[in-house]
Amino acid sequence: MRWDRIIKAVHREVEPILGKGKVASYIPALANVDPKYFALVLTTLDGKSYATGQADIPFSSQSISKVFMLTLALEAWGGRLWKRVGREPSGSSFNSIAQLEYEQGVPRNPFINAGALAVTDAVISKAGERGALDDMLTLVRRASQSDRVRINPDVAQSERQWGHRNTSLAHFMKSFGVIENDVDQVLNTYFCQCALETTATELSRAGIYLANAGKLPHTDEKITRAERATRINALMMTCGHYDMSGDFAFRVGLPGKSGVGGGILCIIPGVGSLCAWSPPLNAAGNSLAGTRALELFARRADINVFKRR
Ligand code: GLN
Image 1 (cartoon, rainbow, N blue to C red):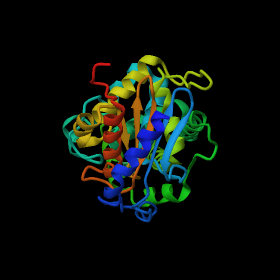
Image 2: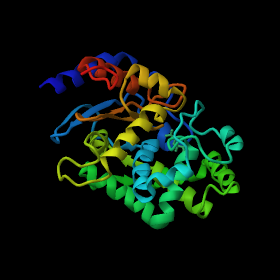
Image 3: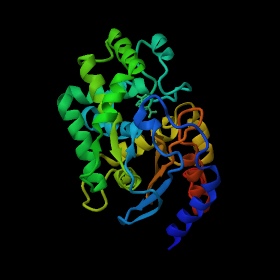
């Protein structure tokens, strides 16, 4: 099978760089992961998954959860969401506070931490604190077809304990009136969503609606409108890798969203959804070998949204 061959070849090719880069160390749950772990999984629209490596070991999805919360926020608010958060690449690190001061507390995009806090706040306004998290979990479980997907309570607790930067971002935005709800509720939900735990196989399945015009291919259930799925993909392409989003677009040519747990969710519209996982990160906090694996995959499969089909 073609996909199997490509995935296995990519695995062999990245082998020499596994372990290179720096595993996130701000919380023990991330620091203690084996830096040599690697997984690459492709789920195609017919529901088949092609996997290599540690595809069934759960890891912390971290910022990849921002994609699912954004989906819920767009469902709840439609275009009005863009009053609270922008759609421009930030050109700064994922947890930067600087830009907020001169843009009246409105974050540049939904994928930097400040933007994700604004998105979570928007979902809470419609669904309540508990509802926001439950809705995200339900979405990921349904799309991944796995009830094992969970919020890891220890990771959520560590996020809370070491979340000083996120706490300041939220309070700073609240001072501008951009955060609507109680700041502690927003932070609590955000810390829990970062603790979303999935395997690479589950995550590759969870993203499939973004490759399939907003629908789950196995049930035809509509998660979001086709137009919104397209726009989420656009934001993943332009903002999904923080200040290395341009580099990711240049090298991989597909929409992608990274998390500091070393995962990357990558969408191939009309074809499928990929998850790469390798814990050590590059300077911008994106998986080093994961990015390379996706670059090699795109090249070998001859898939790139900027290329003539
Ligand atoms: N939990 C991390 C934070 O809030 C998530 C960041 C990330 O995955 N890039 O800083």
